[in-house]
Length: 412
Image 1: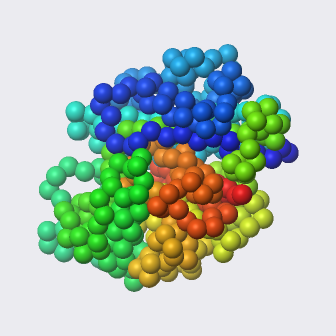
Image 2: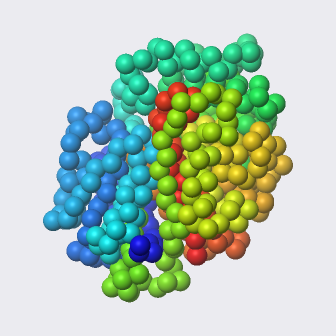
């Protein structure tokens, strides 16, 4: 099968873009990726377009990619629309890589975009309501909240302002981890503080304010143990990647020095397991498959971007990816091992908590950061000597875990 490379990446700043359309954001990210790869639009042989919420906000349920790409002059090629919850963009990346591996072409585009800010706050928060089985929503909520039973929220640690029901679910995952492994709120705050400090040096990040652990703990509560800086914001934005085979690189004249190799791209769905069967988490299984395909192990990883919709997500995923033993993700963060300059830097971009989380773009934003790191072009947030990079991107909820997760391994 063909070797696949990332030849170019592009990304808009994430944040509130009320004056820019979804087409505008798509064009900006794709133009940047094409320019980075030295790729004219006419060289593209397929496009995979990731979006999760345009149907909810605009009623555009069909042909989203065909519309957005045709508006910038890209047509006459296969366009595949991808919706896979928060893992949509990394799934689009996976499909573009498979297109090239199968020999169907030499150059493919993966692009993800979402506009999630809305003057209608209720509609904005309800965008997440279909991230689980809507026919059993109350049963889902009750079962997941039960995971946190036994860790009682202190008085005043729950917000009186509206927030997504999924913050309650993430808090329940926090409390389960606290019960099982002794994880502390301070350790969760250490993750958030680290990511906010990292984001200061990312010009594309939605938030660029540094926080100390104490400031994170003292911030307004969402739902215990989560405070506001521990949670990803609502975001608009887009990210894109141009993928090539070796023949594609030659055709475009891309230097092998800047091309980043796709060592593995794995999509994994969840299973019916008990909440305490942590070693059967879908990301544990996906990571094992990805490491085997890439021919590397977790100790060889230089840098990672993981799905931290809340800071607890980073703790869980550093364990699942094998950067530490199960239950040791909290101490790993508190020691500073996951900071830039630490043993295994995680989320040098600032992560979803700071960089932002436009659902349909998130996975490709991770790829953008890791390609930038592997090229040595990350400036003040550069991880020294980065050679192997891992991205983990999860989406939706079924049972006691994400519905789907993608693990991508890139290398120089």
